[in-house]
Image (cartoon, rainbow, N blue to C red; front, side):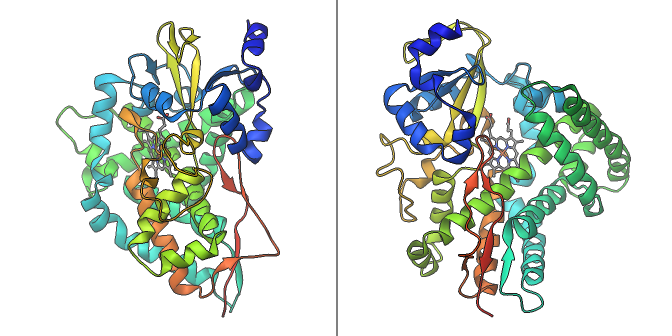
Length: 399
Ligand code: HEM
């Protein structure tokens, strides 16, 4: 079957994950123009690259579902991202309050600002003129924020980071390596065991964090297992993604000094500029859906059970919606129409927090690091076909 598909979809047959990891955008442009629905034999999945097709698929959970076997369900169990319908709505509704703008402003912003100030001060200590921002600022900020929202003590940061590494490897384990799977499941179990006493303590002494709200909820409360699974997806969803979003945003702005100047001269423009960084270089490149029955997209038959990858970075550069889509333009008025947080029922729960973290990091770097620019001796660029971020992000400033 895949042979005849390769004949029908020659561009898809030539797609290599290794090439996507380096620079997916020319590949997306070719697919969008000539094979907008294509079969990629290397991973045995469909790729969609046109924005309107992707919108249609993500808005039709009856036909294209997340409620199917996947590494993320195998690892974390059933949670909001691996279910649909009333169960998904219930999980999401229960977990949404700390991500509302008003709660973020009162509960998350002050500790976030303090933590970013601390990290940037540390970055600049000893009269240093240069520093690496991804691992010393973006990563710890993402960890600190998501642990704080959940209500997991910050003293657990190191253990969470270790578990996270196992999760990340297990979730990318499309080849089904049993050791990677076992290590990931072991980490999820260890998280579950660590969570139990935390929940008992929060039930006794509520502190207004998400886990505290969930364990003290007496109206149709989530079971301990449901709390564990949804906490895991929030934790997993909030670390590498946000670390990458922050790193990509700083990298994109510093790679375009003239545009950075436009943003710096008007505080208002920063939010729009962050949307443009999300559009131009999204941290998460795809959203996967399983066809619930035989169907078709743009006349191409898709069989029940097959997996469709909605390529979000391709939708973000669709010329039918974005003028000069490859150019980075901080004044682009429709930048916010990007699909980097997906769309529909599974629209990213943490989007408001991730945006806030990115804004605070950029503002703090500007305030404390005059003349901030990319370190010319250590050039870098985002890399990766699923999660995209620069491996390191060295910057320099004037002392
Ligand atoms: C505080 C940070 C974040 C948290 C806590 C978080 C959490 C989540 C959760 C729980 C979901 C599932 C929502 C549902 O099914 O109802 C989700 C979906 C998603 N998130 Fe995030 N996220 C964060 C940051 C990000 C960032 C920075 C990006 C990319 C720029 C991102 C991209 C996505 C995408 C694309 C989806 C949809 C996946 C799909 O539909 O298949 N997230 N996020």
